[in-house]
Image 1 (cartoon, rainbow, N blue to C red):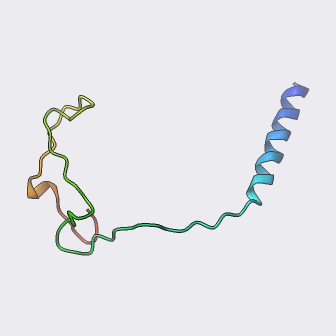
Image 2: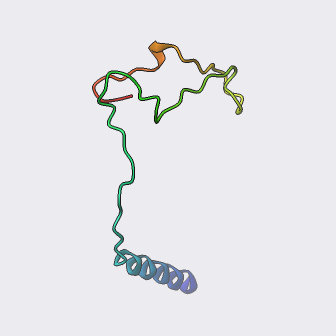
Length: 74
C-alpha cells in the first residue's frame, strides 16, 4: 500500500510540474463556412458504395441535400 501511495504522489508531482510548461499555440488553418456552398478548393466530397473501406453500412454520395451549410455549420 505504501508503494502505491508513493507512485501516486510521484505521478501527481510530475503532472503538476508539467502544467508550468507553457506553450504558445498558433492556428494554421480554419474554415468558417460563411459562404452559401462548400468550398471545393479546400474540401473534397467522398463518393463510394457500402461505406468505402471500413465496411460501414451506408453510401457516401454527393447529393446536394447531404452537403449543405446552414448558419455557418457544415
